[in-house]
Picture 1 (cartoon, one colour):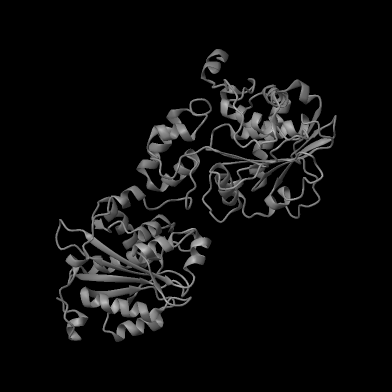
Picture 2: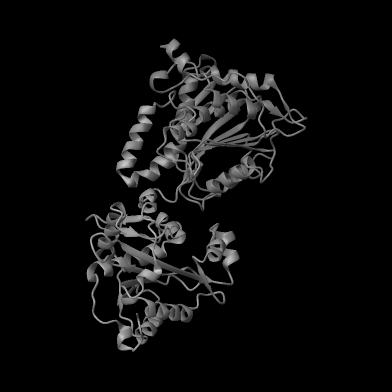
Length: 541
């Protein structure tokens, strides 16, 4: 078994200095060798490798040498923050535990305070328990370290140094004199309070504090982890410079094919060592058969940041429905509108759905979107969304001022009614009273549409069915695509579903408007009764 393991293990053959080393810093091989030797004197604690020496895999050794061997002219470490983002089952917890012990017991710091931080006590205890087992399995440390399991605390008696678990659910945390912090699964932090307390000023009295942040990708782009992730990317890509910050991100790029085993290998540096290809393949097959699992696979196995924990719409299936929509050919055709006003400063969406004329035809979708003209630049910066590009491309319209001009939209819908036979307009009751009255005054049939499970579930399920069957045509409209990708689905005990605006982290107004219009199109079909514009004397053809 030891021989087989050694063959499987990928060792670092030749160390190459990190490209993030500052000009005046040097690589101290002795310091790096010491850190590597300390860690490799520990033992694995779990699975088939339990009790065997902790031999660092090549990528792990690279990180250890970079952090502990890159020294400033004064002899102290250059990096005081290390951000390591990596998929699950890559040996993350054991590396974090080993570094926590190195900082506590092997860094030559008197009365060092090292803290293990996570979102809750259970999560924070994972790394601590690994560290405690490592101590128990190491004769030299077990003689010198006192383990207090009840309080999740280790004391290294020769220097009076401690390793202590903290979690985000603990109350006020100030007054620390931090030498090291190991943040496990930073993406699960509910807010930035613990991160700020532990990393901003707590280590000022120490000469070389280390904040070791290790995490998989998350699903909340308004989190502290996303903020640090963006900083790491900016440094990696050369947009920012911070000599104290060490960034490592293993994962698949957003444009990579998530179904390709080559991508899996790229994203998982310990594949075939800590986790077998068969396990990843099984997880992939499950995700492929159940679209709701795709996001989980991307996040945990490929380390991709996702919009929310359950992706409802499989975007490859949606993209397969980007059949051209010929606006000219649709003139005079029966169609149904869906109107989602959202708020006056937000995106307003109006979507027309044209029912198919025969078995070969598809449900055609024509979406329209508006935002206030005055705050478009602010929104681009705030939301990191390409509103300005979409405007230039003609996919997004702006109305004068800093709020959506409903009168402009009403006029636009009236003009659409002269081209298309709009049988009904479905609308979300919220905030639409005046506009509904005005549209009714123009001769449109306007029907309220409930946003609860009863009304939303059937057309939402139908939208998925039509998408999977490629019986919908949307022309690849980029804003509608973005909104479909943003949908978070809520399910009730009876299995009914609906798009959840509160849980969906970004805009879904166009998707909701599409669902409402689709409902009416399915229910009413190609009703050839006379148009409201026939009654008003307006020529359609």
